[in-house]
Length: 199
Image 1 (tube, rainbow, N blue to C red):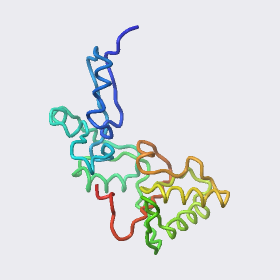
Image 2 (image 1 turned 45 degrees about the vertical axis):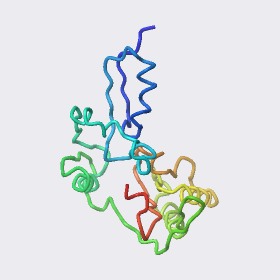
Image 3 (image 1 turned 30 degrees about the vertical axis):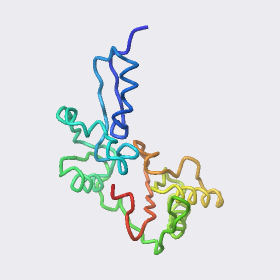
Image 4 (image 1 turned 135 degrees about the vertical axis):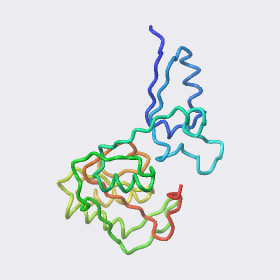
């Protein structure tokens, strides 16, 4: 067996730097490791509450050797431009067939969130999301993303009860990371304060 010499790690920004140690100990013959990820996206789980949890991109030695991939092909141009301006200091360029601003819409669901165990739920948003799927996106390649597990479960249940597509359609933010869909419906849940989304 030829010992592993090169290792490519995707979504590296989500992994606590200390979790790499067993991997490096197991493959002592590694000559090159490439980390792919985005420090402006999801951090390692727990970083918001435990200061010692670090991403590989928090380590200065690695920051100095990083390359910024400055073209995105997945998002319509107006969404890519918004993200470039507000997250990447106008350094991210977009190449995509969709150029119209009609690719983005905001809907006021006129309701508030309530606690559900350790999670949050917004019933008016659940109804609004299900209405969108039923009346507009039933025949589309769509997904629904929400940051709260109680909201994800409520949307899935409602879709299932109405015999609408629900399997592999509703995700938490972190479980959908790295995927894509033609239509993305985001259920933010919170109306008064963004909660942990500030992080």
